[in-house]
Length: 294
Image 1: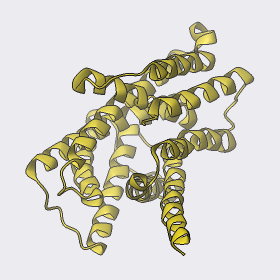
Image 2: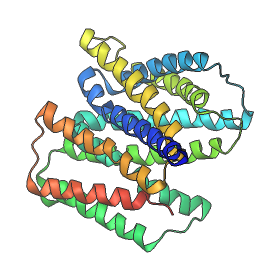
Image 3: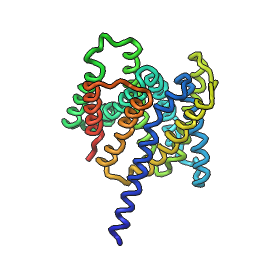
């Protein structure tokens, strides 16, 4: 009986993590389908996420009460996340949902580098091997014929990697805020959504974009990325990941970039040759090795 309960306790978080990863894998697809400017897509994403997070928080009877220092860190997280979306959503438009998501997942390496630079955390030889693997994979995807690529494609690759840098900063600040016992995941994400939404709202008209939603399909896509990918995906992952072994969690979370690539091929007929597939497999393997923690 005790063994059955232990198995259930292990399997249920794993199911939540799997569902959460699938939900998040659709986020670049929803952004692509929304067919509006990158910044206004980010604005609606965080607006709808904030509204649904507020409803969830009220249902759970939680409050925003937490240490002021943690609130400040979470507000900084929101700013970094908004800049991440500015870069990533542009990359989605330029190189497609699949590759842009794969590039953004280079955050694993940027996070480790920043941890070494700021917190003096040791970088292992295995991690350095993973970095070399990832760069080789990226070379197979883009570098073999880099000079012949269009400038827009090159910019998309650069913005995808830049998104990973800003996301790594977001992760480090989020981890620091979560060290405070007064911080709970849903209220924390709600606080993050507020400065993120405000910054994207300010940037959108500056870049000459509008807040107009062209049709019902675009609205459904924006609701999907805000509620399904952001609120539901984040909530499921944040509540499940602490109950799962790190190596298993890292493997499951690889579903996000893998499925994003699959959805890109299936929905948008992305051409994928043998060298590119090999490069993708190299990068996915490198991301898993790079995210491994004993």
